[in-house]
Image (cartoon, rainbow, N blue to C red):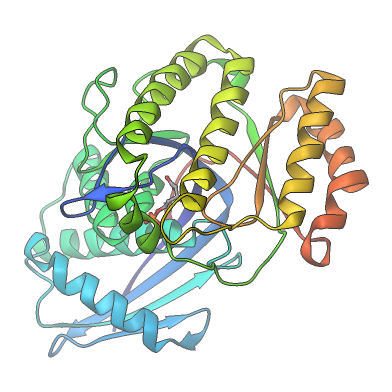
Length: 340
Ligand code: PMV
C-alpha cells in the first residue's frame, strides 16, 4: 500500500464556536490560535479495492473511531471523486490525551482531511494551488469537526462569516488577513491537566443543546461583538481587552453548558481554584496572563512569552497541585500542519 502522512496541531479557541445549524455551519464566527506541540500524526495508506476503511488510533484498532471515520469519508466522497473504490488504512497517533478538553478532534480531523486532499491531488494528477488546497482541506475538516477547520493553518485563524473579515466564510476557516500586534505574536499556552478522563458530554451534544437554549440568540450576538473587539485588540496590541474577552468567552461557554437543559458542569473544583489563582496573580503583578477552557475541566493558561519565567513560577508554586499527577503541557502558538 502507498502512504501519505500529515502531522496537524490542535488549536485553542479564544472566541468559541458553540452552536451550529445546517451541515456543520457555525452559528457564530470563532477565532483560535493553532498550537505547536499538541499534534495528531495521521498516516493514510491506500490501494485499489472495494472501499474498505480501517482505522488504528494510538496503535490500536478502534471500532468506534473506525465507524465514525467511515461515515465521515462516505459523506465527503462527492468532493473527492477518486476516493470511491479505494481501500484505506488510517493510522492516527495523538501525542496528548484525547477527549479531555484539548481539542483532539481538531488535530485528528484536520490531519485526516489533509491526507485525503493530498491523496485526491495525487490520484487526479492535477496540482492545486496552495491556497485552494488548504481551503479545501479546511472545508473537509469542518465537515468532520467544526473546530478542525481552523487547524489546517498556523497562527491566528478565524472560521465563520464575520463582516469585518473580508473573505471569511461559514464553509471554511482562514488565517487572519492582517499581521497581529507584536504583543500577541509569541503567545504561550500552558495546559493544566486537571482531569484526563473522557468528557462528561460530547461537543456534538453541546452544539445540539444550543438549538433549544433560551439564551442562544443573545449568545450568538454577543460572540459577534467579542469577535469584533478581539480583532481590534489583536491589531492594536490591547492586552487588557484581550484578557477580558478571552476570559469572558471561556466563562460564557461554561455558563451556556450549565444553563442548557439538561445542564452540565464540566469544570472541576481544581479548575475553579486555578482560575481564581490566575486572576489573583494578574492583579498582583499586572502580567497579562489569562485563562480559557474548552468543553472540559482543563485550564489553558495563556500569556506572552516575555512573561514565561514568572508564569512558570506561578504554575510550579500554586497551580500544579490541582493537576492530575502534576501534569501540564507547555505549548505555544504554532506554524500549522506539516506533511512528511
Ligand atoms: O469542533 P467541535 O464540534 O469539537 O466543537 C468545539 C467546541 C469548542 O472547542 C468548545 C470551541 C471551539 O471553538 O473550539
